[in-house]
Image 1 (cartoon, chains in turn cyan, brown):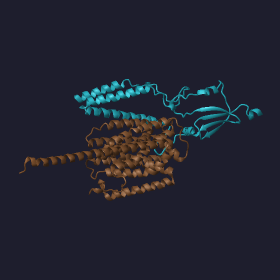
Image 2 (cartoon, chains in turn green, orange; image 1 turned 30 degrees about the vertical axis):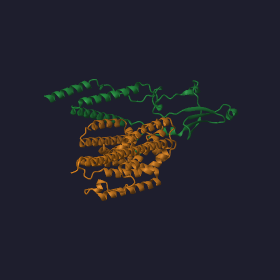
Image 3 (cartoon, chains in turn brown, cyan; image 1 turned 90 degrees about the vertical axis):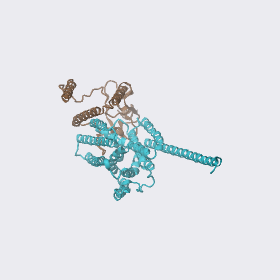
Image 4 (spheres, chains in turn brown, yellow; image 1 turned 60 degrees about the horizontal axis):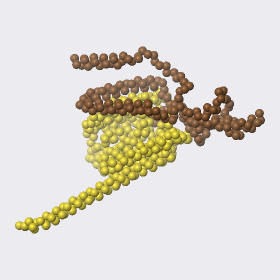
Length: 199
Length: 360
């Protein structure tokens, strides 16, 4: 009888817990729609300068090699690590397996708690403290107004805004990979250079 | 029969003598404790110097230090670890038989599967999905193995360590969300395990140095903090040669693309240098095997009549031969040897788990 009551209580609890689940809601559309105001923290970042250079005949875009290296496709290392985004099918599988193990973890933790009733009070206090600490840390992380890491921040375009005047600027450039420095540079021939004079 | 007046001087002389002995003993004890305290302070000072020097070198020349330390110390530190683990093995396993059986099975299986994973990773047979799944499965097996060992060790030592099972399950769940992060955390946490080993060994053989060691350990977060502060916005390490790319990727450049590779490599090589220093200098010094590691008389598996002295000697000799072979291979082709070494070295990373648990 007692077993029946326990099972019935567990079934009721499961139904109550499952009732708000949005099982009939359509799967969200996972197609990436890039919004113009999105901060693409997955992309590498760097400073850019536009300079006019006296005597330069062609415009030249200089890109530091380490930025290019970050743009290289993800490669596998011998340590079994891979970079970049997770592939789609793996993402689905990982969610399922992670959910299963998370459930197993909760079940095992519950069983342990039930088995060690003698120390229930101290354990409950410890669990409450852990929850409180985690909640506090989460709250601090969310509301402490600390700036995110530099790569995740909105990259300030600075005075580059002044380089555009409403209508697009276009022209050919030579793309050059440079070893030194960390800035991307657009070198533009100065007005009144030799070619302008010839025209 | 002697009178009391005759006996009294004798008593007073005896009493004076006892007082003198007690005083001498107290003086000896004070001198001894002062000596121990000063040796503990010297040990802490040496630790602090190693931390400071490693952090400075790692900050200024991360690539050079990485190449040099792996070339010089990777092989020897594995040999020292092997000798240490053999010395920690009991001659008769007794109740620990199942614990050691699971430990050995885990080390062999996980190392072999890691090697297979590395082979597949370098071939074009597997795509990204298969590789992600492979890494996640390997990580899951590793975490499950560690959790099982913790649980078994808890049962053997009559401690409540069953929490390892839910904690392990939760970690496996997190691993499936970001398997590459767990792999990277192993790369960075493994060097720190050596510091834990040293603490446990100090507790056994040099407990009077422990407080000084803990004080020196406080410098570690400070050194890391300074490294991260100074290198957070440092430009990434230039160069796309095979060695540089391997070092940079091993430190997690692919997993944490927004972090400066200079910071990553410096942090990793700093911790690795400490790891080598602990295993090659501090552990033999504290365990009493410094200067004469070939003396095997104190090892239970050699000394005990049920031990395997020939096998142990052969194993250590083969290990020493492997160290020399590794040096030669490094000289021949550093990049490839580094790959092979870090794949096979998974065995020593895994072997540390059961022995550390035995010491906790």
